[in-house]
Amino acid sequence: MVSDTPPETPVDVSHIDTEGLAKGLNPSQETAFRFDAGAALVLAGAGSGKTTVLIRRIARLLAEGVPAKRILVATFTRRAADDMADRLLALVGPEVLDGIWIGTFHSHALRIVKREWADLYGKEGKFEIADDYWQERAVRAILGRSGVNDKLPSPPYCQNIKMDRKTALLAVSACKNMGKYAEEAETALAYLYPDWEKPAIVDTARFWRCYEMAKMKEYDVLSKVPCKRLDFDDLLLECWMLLRENASIRTKYEVAFDHVLVDETQDTSDVQWEIARAFARRNGNLFLVGDVGQSIYGF
Image (cartoon, rainbow, N blue to C red; front, side):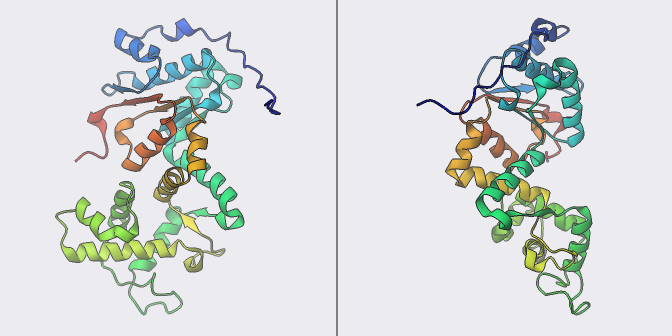
């Protein structure tokens, strides 16, 4: 069977000095830089050049003919992603780098969820981000006293919960990053916060369920144009669900990438780790760089 898709025109990579990319690397760094295929974990301390090795390794892969669009790089912050892209651009040039996936786990998840929901649900798959401004208003309304504003439906609003807004959101976020949903709120919260008294667990679980309701279009009454909303943790959960439960979508992204590279691995949550594993499951080329001494999730 002959494909109707024309072959891709190879990108000229002759200007990339592969051996020059290894210049200045110590023996351990060069081992990571030259690592061929399979899974690898690179652990090193702060300021040891971990990201430099990662960037040069990506440039080496591109110089050896791996198409940019077949490489996915996940970082922890948007600033780190932008810096990495700029440094790679200086090493290989825009044509070679065109199509590469570089960004945070959240940005990759947003891209996938938008694309796949549009295909699966059409107009019903549209959503907006529950940003900080929306969250502040919604959480204040949820925690507020009952009877204060009769225009707001209760639930999800006016629940008269005495809880700090940041504490409530952080607790929910921590559970979601473990891959938990509001339906299992009490169990998840009790596991994460064993020192909390039962009333605190119950109140936080009630807040969580109301918070999820508030993001539904029919309850998004705080917005001028109501719509379904996803917060940043939802993006990860929804992306993971698509990869986990939809075989065709899972296969699409398993075969999409020849190499998956993750910077600041110590900061990946359970859900982010599962997403990375899903991307790399077919080819097995998962390259992780991190420093356990800098983990923000350590206890």
